[in-house]
Image (cartoon, rainbow, N blue to C red; front, side, top):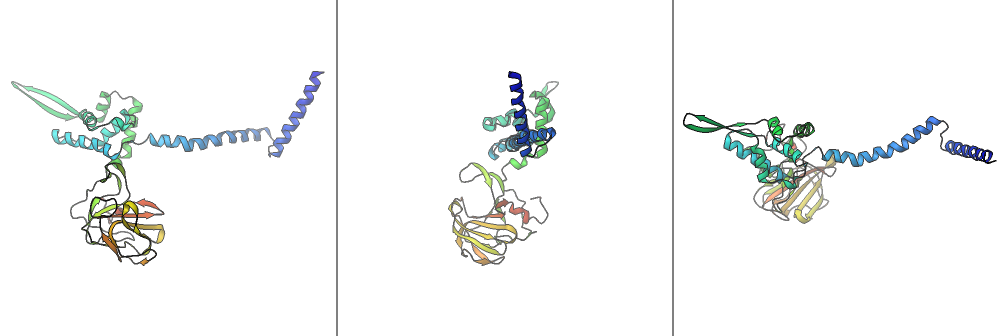
Length: 319
């Protein structure tokens, strides 16, 4: 008696399941399989994009701050000068990225110097009664063998080097002597009487707080009161005090661009005022969070900061 009842229940369950699938637009078994795969793999794909991809990206770059990167630059420079070698600080940084597994809380100037010394081979030479030393440079492969890196670790080192690690150093202020801006885009130089760049766009150690950060513009050094002009025609959307930026002007231009002028001593425009390219908008100062008289000049497009220097190189990037 139980079997016929069970069979009837099973039949009704099958009909109910078929009706439910039909309401979902699934009429064939293979459609059900496709739907199940879609339901399973779509969330997995989304999880991979939002969680796995950042992990992979983080694993692809050094996690050193600019001040920590400087340890390796200084160490290589010191030994190169002392032993007349050509140790590449990027090789030392890439190697230590792997050795430290990206945790640069364990690095220091002494550690960087010790690692750089692995690239120096000391050769003792005895000639009759005289003993002297010569110094040769070990290759990266030799140093990795000394440090007993496995194949995966070596490939990681070479992957880091293929990226070009100079992007992680403090951008500094190095410009060729006598450099002058050569505009190649819509903007003119905002401080006509000074071409002195005291800090470039990019990662740097903040001169006020001494901490690592991102510098979103160019610092142009000039005496207090030096004229600042509008880099392009537009509308002043801000003109006044702006917190740590001190006295500031922001001008909106065509094409989604805006230029920002910070730490000004005086402001000669008002909010909402239209300006032409080259119009006087104020003067250089040191208001807000600043260590001296200069103009902090930014160019943004759709609110994203971009390197202003690219508009003034005239096609020559050897600056």
